[in-house]
Image 1: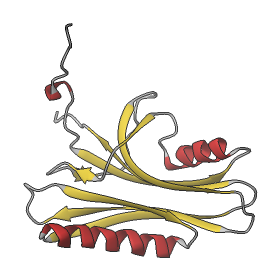
Image 2: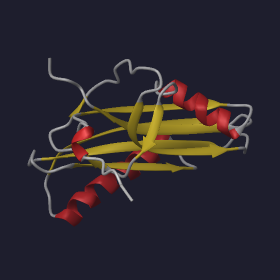
Image 3: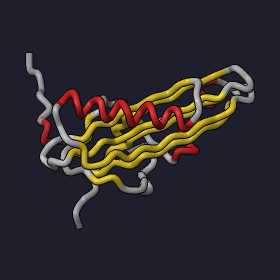
Image 4: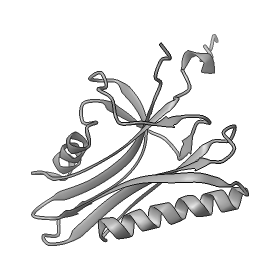
Length: 167
């Protein structure tokens, strides 16, 4: 039996991260999620859900125009609710190490809470992650969104990773 092995060199290590967030209503739970992705600016790409590691030396930049259908590694949190009047929120943070040879940490959170509470929680999680590694933090960047549910609502926050060529 011949088994092909995919070389890691086929995939470029992401060197850029964009923090995005969006919230919306939808006629169904999936439509609420899709509409939140559209509000966040990543509704027309394919999200590949990843764990919470940012490659060393990656930059945090505004989201560029991504090609439709692109495969985008993404760490995200989201919450969907069908409870009118409920306030839901999602947040993501990126902790950057002082030592640029080390990776950064991405933390995600979603809950029935305010935007402020979600952002505080996700930033604290990033601090804890660095403490557990014994690393020093250079800075933490975060983004959050909240939504008051009308019928079916979704709050979504993400760190989208991609490779930017150095031209």
